[in-house]
Image 1 (cartoon, rainbow, N blue to C red):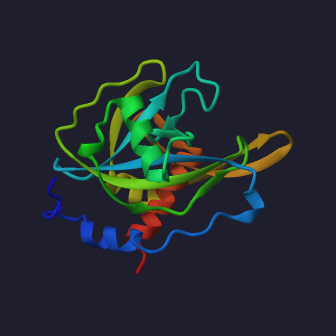
Image 2 (cartoon, rainbow, N blue to C red; image 1 turned 180 degrees about the vertical axis):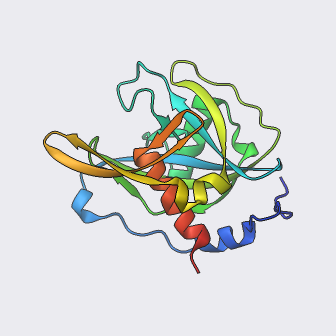
Length: 197
């Protein structure tokens, strides 16, 4: 798959360079957290780059109905976070691994409410996408313009109380979708890596 001609306004080489830095070591304060990985799928080839997101099915035990990246906990047979992210993306949305160019990782994201240590793995996809959703896990998949998600004016801070502890989170409402929590936090991390000087 050839990603050498990036769309206007999106510097793929810059992103590759930013994500090729050595991954941070896991934070020892969260040593007991369950390892997981998600695919942060950047879709190029359309009018403008987008991020592919999913809405989780309402009956799921973890984060039901929430907006998420494809992904999940690491299985015993997974050899790396990349392997986990690709396997989960194939299981959840039918995204074949050969449709993805992996370009790096973002720092691990710790979800204290559910005890997950999530490694976000960034990959490039080219349109047209051929997806087949697993209806048990995923209610729908949709794309959100990267320009919207990268703009700090579209973010707001919120808070939620869980087990007597108040936690702050990012939120980015978009066209009826409530993008918040860990997903929004990883998008903010992605924006910081892409836009920092």
